[in-house]
Length: 308
Image (tube, rainbow, N blue to C red; front, side):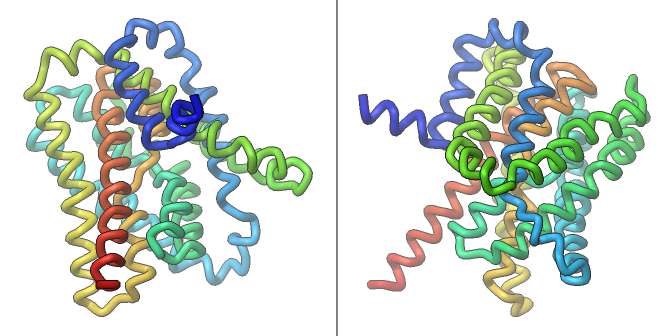
């Protein structure tokens, strides 16, 4: 029993379990699809308690990491992903799913993993903050422009950003009050992990027939996600180190470049373009998880190699 409880507390296990449950029990996903935006708002609120209010000050020290977070998250990653999707994906809804991923803000998992992977945590916080604030304006414009406002209104997009980013960010400031944060700090990890797992379950469940019947589509989606995470992340890291960049900051930049908020992408894709557009976003969760595990195992292997 203790072993099972420990498994259910493990983020990696919970997210993988959500994928399998979506494949097995996906028929139930449709009945809870309408609640995705509320689940995301709760998850984002608790996630953003990782961003300390003190990180906003002094403002002049925010500019460089915020601009870099915006550049990596919305320019480099987006150009690579949308370019690959344009050439490899023929289905319009699937392509729109990749557009949503490309314009999705970074995942808040960047902050704890910056600590785990020996990156610059404060630098990561400011980069994430800049990209999050930019999302409110960039995503409505970029998605509307690339898709030609196909059935969506820019105002609706903007309101979605307000509901899922601005309001949760404001509420998270309240949750950082000492008395409230004592409780929040205890439950935060589980709320975030199980909230994201529920969103992944919905995305996989709504499209379970595609996972079973269209392997070629899944291979193309997997190829794009592999190239925009493993290949892009490692190439950027290699080039940055060749240019004698600070290794600690390079790790944070690697995460800012490759780690996207899969829950945000799921909800945005379903809300704007329907369930098929959510297929790439379900894959996103898997590849982000695999990439973070790869970086963790690589660091452990490097540390063991140095000790020999």
